Image 1 (spheres, rainbow, N blue to C red):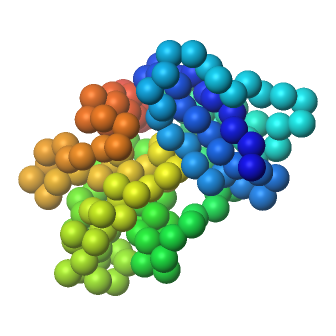
Image 2 (image 1 turned 180 degrees about the vertical axis):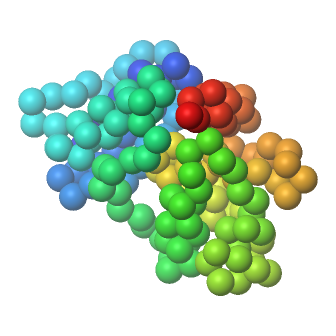
Amino acid sequence: MQLVDYHSPLGIIEIKGNKLGIYSVLFVEREQVKYMKKPDTATPLLECFTQLDEYFKGERFTFSVPFIFEGTVFQQAVWRALTTISYGKTASYKEIAILVGNEKAVRAVGTTNGKNLISIIVPCHRIIGINGKLTGYAGGLWRKEWLLNHEKSNVK
């Protein structure tokens, strides 16, 4: 497993993966880049780095980097459903529960959303409360708000 740090406008993002794909993309609370790209850095990590660059420049609206979910069948279904939420749009926990075929699983969807390890690429930041209010985000609500505003300002 390899690690690479990406310096985003919101702080450092740690990318973890290997030649098969990306396992995590997470905000970390440190000031300095700790893990640098190297000549032997796996291709998916390099692709992720490039695609995050494009995303933050407002040039990328979907991600094509291969990623690997580690979780239950239900969790994987929820995370896949998150990837169907279009750039610049939002959805509620209930809408995702319906998408995965269990409209009563709203709380389980919320819990699973909070366990998403592939931030931005699997866009858990696009989930809001049914009342339209921002709800929790592992990277901090201020980052969630920034990401949503960033996407809305780049929708053509």
